[in-house]
Length: 222
Image (tube, rainbow, N blue to C red; front, side, top):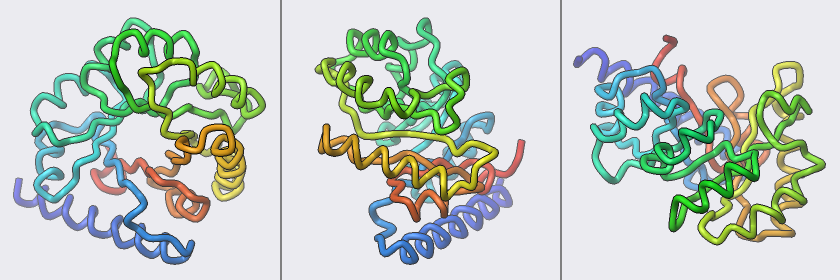
């Protein structure tokens, strides 16, 4: 266990310093970037070590795994759901997830709104125009935003996206930033951007990401 603690501590510190450098290079403060450590497929014991190392934001993408894991950690943790949503799992997800990063369906948003009194969400955008991979097509974002704004219990934080494999991350994130700028004109409070993972978070930070989701660079590869 002590070896695992050292390993996680080293990896976490390395990522934090890379975040600081990337923020500095972009003329930003590292303070405005939330690091979400993605603990999916890793045991609660790893999440507990990370908690002791100061991590409070944890990312999961499977309801069954996360609903169990989240009960084993202190209440001041923030749990982020970033997987594909299944309607029949929404009630359970709403119980443990503080933030849902992958809202891309009005029916899901409507159901979520009926289950909660207040919930933070990000709208997932498809940057590769492949709707079957999840995400709202960029051209449909204004219309989607207008519809979703009618749900009083959902607090729209901003946009979330995953960089497509066949596009340079920085180009993908430039598109996302341009889209975010349009969204902010419609909804000034929806100014946050959830983007960037282990292999491309520096590019995401350079284009304004406020939330980055990192798993393998901290926990290793499963």
